[in-house]
Length: 283
Image (cartoon, rainbow, N blue to C red; front, side, top):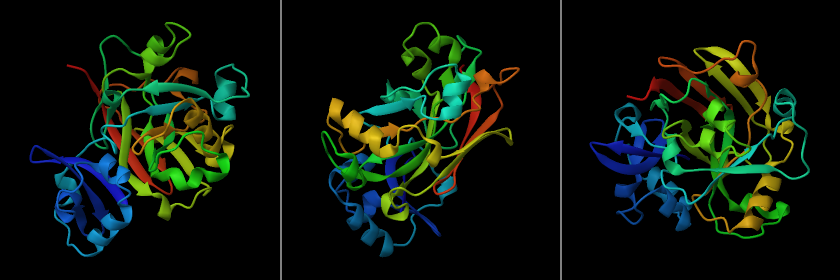
C-alpha cells in the first residue's frame, strides 16, 4: 500500500493511494484510528488493506493537501555522514559508530507543500534521503530482527540551513527551522519493498540532477541504524529514521548551490516515488 496523511476541506485524515484515487481510511475503518500513527500502533495494516480492497476511492489525490507522512512522530532520528562521498566532500572521517541528530515534527512539510527559507539564512541546502517508518515497538533490537519492526519507507529531504548548522559543533539549529524539510509523498509499506532491497535515491533541483546513490553505498546499514538508536531509547510505531544523504550537496559544490524562492526540489527513490517541494521565502 501507499499510505498518506492529508488535509481535505479543513479536516485532517489519512488514506491509501490506489489506481483510482484515495481511499479514506478514517471512513473505511469506522473512525477506529485517528491518524496513520495510530493505525501502525494498532497493528492494523492488514485490516487497512482489506478495507482498501473492498472500497471505491473517496477522493482524487490532486484534491488533497498532503501532510508529512507521519505528521506527529514521537521521534525523528537522522543519520549524518552515512555515505562515503558525503564524508569525503565534508573533509571528515568515517566513524565507527553512526552519527545521529534529532529533528522536530514542525520542521517538516508534505509533498507539494513549500519548504520555507527563513530570512535569517541564504544557505538553504538539499539532502536526498530515505526515511524508514517504524511499525512495532522495540528496544535494543538486534540487527537480524530489524525487518519485523519496519512499517515502510518514504522519501525525505533533510533541508538544511548550512550557516546555522555551522554556528557550533552541534547541527541541530541548521536542521530544525520551521518547514525546512520534506517528508513524503507517501509511505510504501514494507511488504512492497522486501528488507534489503537495493534502492536508488536522486536529487533534482529545477530538473538538474545533483545527487545519485544507492543504498549499497551506505556506511551504516538501515539494520545497524535501527539497532543503534533502539539501544538509546525504545522505538515506537510512527517513529522515523532518516538514513543519510549521499555526496553532491549544494554546500560542497563550486560555486555552492543554494535553494531559493521559486525553485523546485525533487527527491526520487526508485522503489517509492518522487517527493517534490517548491521553495518559498518565509513571509
